[in-house]
Length: 246
Ligand code: BTN
Image (cartoon, rainbow, N blue to C red; front, side):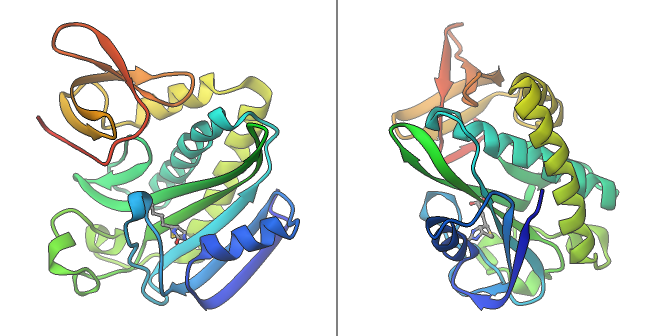
């Protein structure tokens, strides 16, 4: 599945490198990995802390033959693959916070940023960016993030081998991507729901359309969160800037 791995010392963002390669025609299965990012990107225009040698900062090019509206399914698939890979290597209680943050004890250890390019509403390529905070210490995080971000090392008390993490992720991703291509989103949806820490707990979500309060009860076919509001009505949430207890 992985055709080429391109390793870099320092880059601005592995997303930029992978996007450039995809535009130049790089095939599905091209993986860009960097030791350090000087301008790592998170979702919602946030910055992603990517100090040298301490994490997994990588971007994977995919070229699924799918309508653009299904791209969020790939993010959820990547989150399941990553969660399985990390659980295999670290005896931690790791869960997925919708849509694709991995949390340990309520703190974030990993994030996924999916950026896609489409033509006539069909995916040309997708770049799945994966950031895993592996061996960062408290000092690597600014004060403001210490309550909400953590690393595998902080949680475990020891360092982990980044190569093993990458290998495990690739193995799980490949397995789930094959399942997805054969059977569609439904098995991935069930796996995601089983690993989710978001479902069945009341939340307040800040969405582009305003605040939504309610209880997430599942995922829709398109990967949106189905939220049951206090009046019993259900609503779909496609993206949210933040979420937390009401
Ligand atoms: C998020 O949770 O906000 C998503 C974080 C994604 C970070 C990864 S690190 C590798 C890739 N390159 C980037 O600039 N961002 C993604």
